[in-house]
Amino acid sequence: MEMVSVPMKLPKGMVPYLSDTERDRSFERNAMMLYPYIQDLTISHGKAADILGVNKLDLIDFYCGMGLPYLNQSISDLEEELADFHRMRGNAE
Image 1 (cartoon, rainbow, N blue to C red):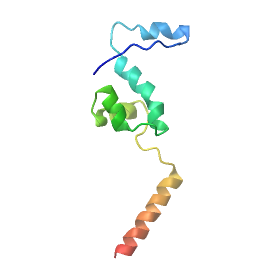
Image 2: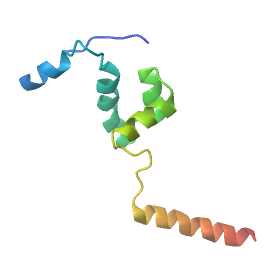
Image 3: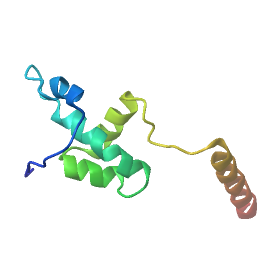
Image 4: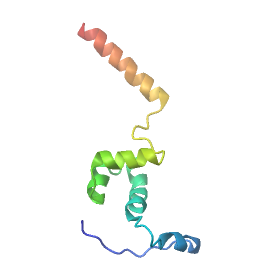
């Protein structure tokens, strides 16, 4: 995976946490930077995984471990899909 440097303006208080020499946390940082674009549907989990050079399921597992669900449907959306499923199932019989 090709890497580039991008200058960023950050709060000064973040600096000690970005220069962590004990452990490379670039994957976690980069994955979290991409998450808002997944959440607003600009990119998919698969595209984010490609950008990060990891398997899609590994990325989904990482996000779930951070408390960020793969499926983010509201209860009303889920109920609507279940109703559609039951209607379609009833029409097929």
